[in-house]
Amino acid sequence: MSQARQSIQDTLERVSNRNPGEAEFLQAVREVLDSLEPILDRNPEYIRAGILDRIVEPERQILFRVPWQDDQGRVHVNRGFRIEFSSAIGPYKGGLRFHPSVNAGILKFLGFEQIFKNALTTLPMGGGKGGSDFDPKGKSDDEVMRFCQSFMTELFRHIGPDTDVPAGDIGVGAREIGFLFGQYKRIRNEFTGVLTGKRLAWGGSLIRPEATGYGCVYFAEEMLKTRNESLAGKVCAVSGSGNVAQYTVEKLLQLGAKPITLSDSNGTIVDPEGITEEKLAFVMELKNVQRGRIREYAERFKSARFFPDTTPWQVTCFDCAFPSATQNEINGEDAKAMLQNGCTLVAEGANMPSTPEAVDLYRAHGVLFGPAKAANAGGVAVSGLEMSQNSMRLQWSREEVDRRLREIMVNIHRQCWKTAEEYGRSGDLVVGANIAAFVKVADAMLDQGLV
Image (tube, rainbow, N blue to C red; front, side, top):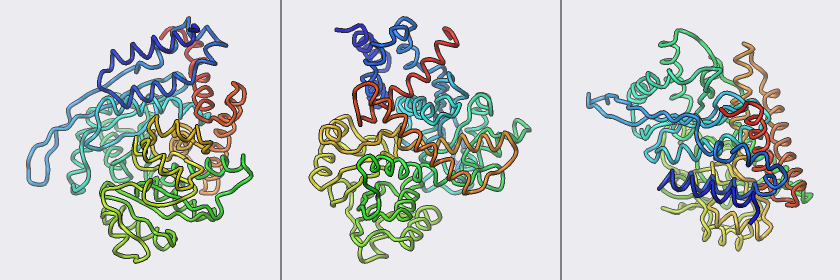
């Protein structure tokens, strides 16, 4: 066994022993480390400096109580988290997730992925993640406000525009960001770019709501160019029906593709006639304003069928997949069905939506595969652009931000493609993304000494 492989195995064993039961975090660590043997063989100084052991351990983990009162005066207590994983190349940057599934293991997985995703954007941002097991679904605006204010009353101690800049994630949209920012401003008596995803009128960036979905589609477009293809005419399956899924559909329509699916936790709609701009407008009103369920789409549009308690991956045929819901939503059986149904491209809009078994099948069958840390980096990229605009006290035009976003996604694809070729794994964007991002972060860690 080579020194590099031994170092990887030793680190994986230590991570497993230190983080029992944190399956998603261990999965994310293994996925990255298993790609790094070629770079470690070439650069043994990374092994001597203990970079692997250092990069898998968060710099700081914050856990706190979040008490709040509902509209009936009942007291509830949730847990709040912030995982400040790596500040090697910039202030911690990553979203806040409000969802019952949130725990330390989930956030460590997300924060670890964020290190490499942020490095690929070429912007100076470290990796972090946070959130709470609070569920905003079914809560009134006043209840959400009281929770957010309680959450920020502790979190404010640990964040700042040059320290840690949270954004939104699942369950944290413009409403929640507004309440969080208001409380931060109230406590600190300062108006700074401490959060991204703000509304446009008070420091937000144009294209930020669209950025993850748009960026994922731009990345898919670059993957198809390597085979002299385009998205025009491609039948596309999109999972989820939140922010990422909505704007993935919007950009697919703009580029001539035919999106046919959306989903939520209750099931999937399939519309063989395609989700048009009119139908997408209905989804946006349904999900963003009425906070309804996706089955109502099939009740409104008779061309669609609703499949309860299922995801899009086994219920229809399509050319391109854009998983945009949550982690591990595509398993091995789903991937087999996708391949049988003609899928030739997977661009991950959610964070780690494919299990290792699914990824192995994509790679074995020559599917164009854009891993999440590359394909969905558009969201954090425009968060970085929002930070820049806040620092300069100005606002770029929609066209300017969209141009920069597209350039970033093209550059990310180019980095991943070239790195994969350099290490003898042509076309393998998993290896390309992991090595390209690792080198940037590891070199910064070497430069800064043992900290």
